[in-house]
Length: 122
Image (cartoon, rainbow, N blue to C red; front, side):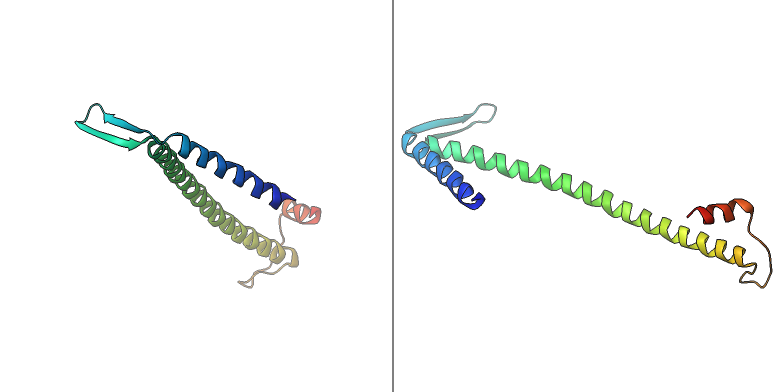
C-alpha cells in the first residue's frame, strides 16, 4: 500500500512538472544586475528547473556538512566510551584483587570498605 501511494505521489509530481514545462515555454531575459551578463531567449521552464536544481544541490551540501559533524562527534564519543570501558575494567580488576587479598606484585591487603560495599551493590 505504501509503495502504491509513493508511486502515485511521484506520478502526480511528474505530471505537475510536465504541465509547468508545457505552460511556461515562452522565452525570458535573465539579467544579473551587478554583472554585465544578460541571457536572452531562455525558456522560463529552464529558469524554473535550474532554480530547483540549485536548491537541491545547496541542500545536499548543507546536509553533507551536518552529517560530517555528526559523524565526527560519534567517533569522538566512541573513543571516549572505549577509554572509559578500559578504565572500568582496570578498576574492577583492582577491586577483585583487593577483595581476594592478593595483588599482582605479591603484596597482600584488603580493599577499602567503600570499594567492597560498591562491589556488593552491583
